[in-house]
Length: 192
Image 1 (cartoon, rainbow, N blue to C red):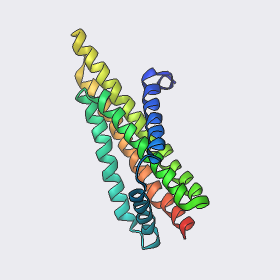
Image 2: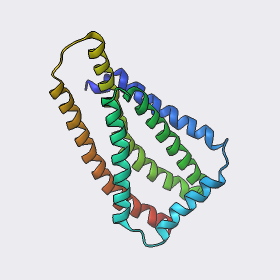
Image 3: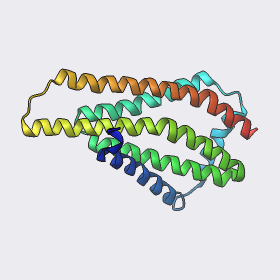
Image 4: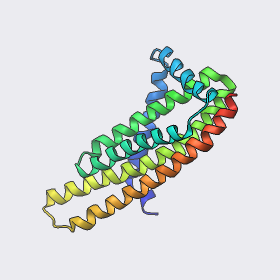
């Protein structure tokens, strides 16, 4: 596949890994009390009656906001700056969360960490990485067109980009369903 051989995709993935490394290092440099309290309160939700519909709505709103920010940054020629920044922050957040869970729950934490790693990296972050790839590509292509004063069919250019965004939104909705109903149930049974 052409996309897998692309330098931009390799750079986007590398930026995400840099975020994970920064998060792993920063976990040991920051005050962990706030993080531990946040983790405890997060898992307490599973001990009470977890509202799946509310979780699904909140997850989808978050995903729409992040994906829209990545998508619109590509149109505004800011995709080269905003998309990598979002990926670094997601990598930092993921690594701090996983390490905190493992430190707090010991052996259970390893299992919980693997489940959360699966739901975050393989489901959500893969979509955000691909969306960032298209955002950065669009920014670079648009900049080159403007710089070289080329003429393009702008309607089809942005129509394809919008169509890809809709596909990613649909995938994120399906991923949210899996995360809220299946992953949450797995986490609930491990904790209890």
